[in-house]
Length: 137
Image (cartoon, rainbow, N blue to C red; front, side):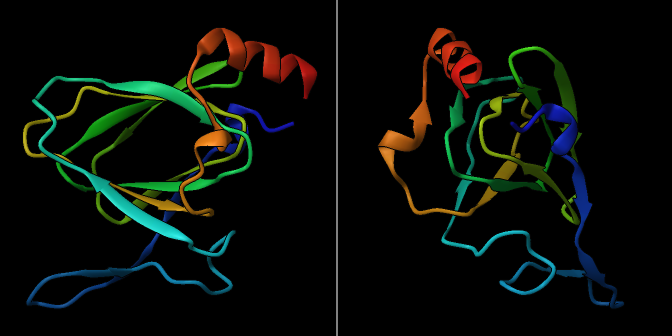
């Protein structure tokens, strides 16, 4: 069973150039899963939060491509908050972890790289159901 302590920041490759920096994420030995889906969240009003959920199988890399936000992780027993504010850092969120995204700065862009395609049945949207799921895992 995964816990919040298995969810860590990963420093992405950063290629420096006087014209700007470049970070790369690709299916290779450096990724812990094959990339099946990429999406991004933007135009979230400054200071706003996004609802919480967990996934039964899906893993994610979450990156603050621009601006900053907090992600609160919860494994049913422990909680920790991670601030994402650098585009070369990804938070690896393992399966079975509840997450809430909070405190978006104005203009922040949250990019999510996922191990699976969208599957509604993989989501746990209700926190009480999440706690039951964790107890039965």
